[in-house]
Length: 315
Picture 1 (cartoon, rainbow, N blue to C red):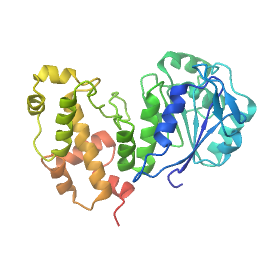
Picture 2: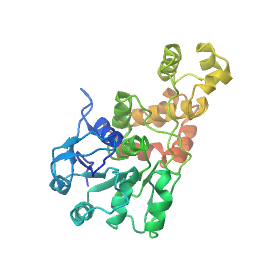
Picture 3: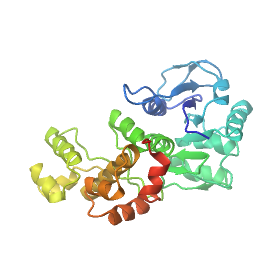
Picture 4: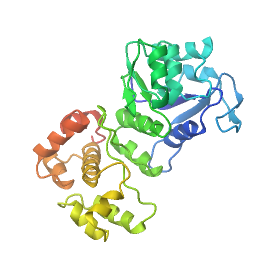
């Protein structure tokens, strides 16, 4: 099946406003140069839907839009402890049966579990409700530590902001790093986050909003990946001690951030140019092609040439 272009997100009663924002930010329009998606927000029937913030949301589509979308997403709702009606369950079962990619954000995983789509699979949900999901559905292997779990035809994401991790991962998986990185930049987010998971979620960008000078230093680093950058040099340019500089990173180390910056840069070069692996390694600051291969296999699961064959946009 080709990469998805149409997306349908199911909004149950009490749908999370953040979850709606996640799918519209990731799959909505992003301006010139970034291909868009046909995104439809759906409910049991068109009309107003209550949100978790008490603000009614006008949803233009009913369940029929789930029948044709390439990617179907179950969003979290306030009443997730009560299984949805037969029509909703059938819509997700039919989507999976016809080959659509099915995903769930946060407690939306309860919808997929109720539909039987997570039986025999790994899945995740908001950590607060992971035990409940495992207790109600013992046939599901629940991973409460993962930001997302990718089971191929079905993917689940953890709570709140982890919806971005899930959606950006699906973009990267189906459309490649260049598009995922472009969308992440547009919404001012890292395209990967380091959660120590088997998915090799990469390190988040450091906190820069409070320090324009720090943001300039990190932008300089992105433009000089081919140089032997060190944390000491970056701290010096930021006019900080190494310890102070490291503390400005919200959930990663400067070393991890640099590593993921180099890997992300390598992905884009592999996708969009015909440079050799050796030259790609040099341009992103690795000492040799062997080092790049080792890092790529360890953190992306495949060697650079295999990645290129999958995602290349060059003739």
